Length: 117
Image 1 (tube, rainbow, N blue to C red):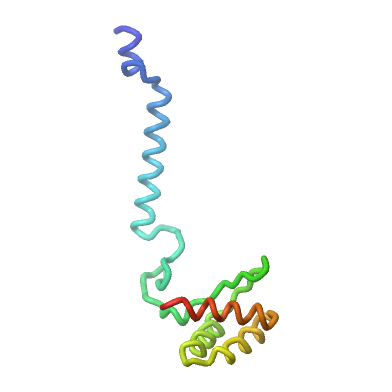
Image 2 (image 1 turned 180 degrees about the vertical axis):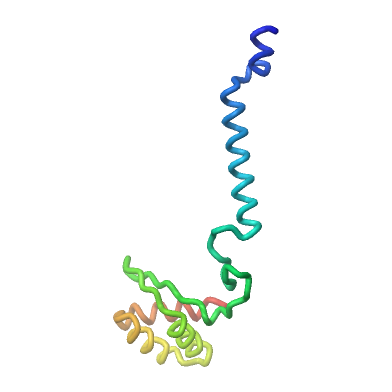
């Protein structure tokens, strides 16, 4: 057998194994995501597959480089105030929960009001 045939017609054997390993890694990652492996749940779902109302999900707020997580109960109350047409009450509740300044809280509430569930 000549040298070229041993190297898969000029393709180094190491590269072939590298490509095979990369392909296998992508496939296993895709497969784990499809069967619900140890990843994050999709928005609106728990890891068990049950639907969670979007109002019951916590909100992560980033203002001026500071990240604040609103618990699901507070987030639901703020979303309800926005939906009921009371943005002033939502700003007040957000300020109570996070300690944000009025302008920062109003900017967050305005952003949340534009998001459609």
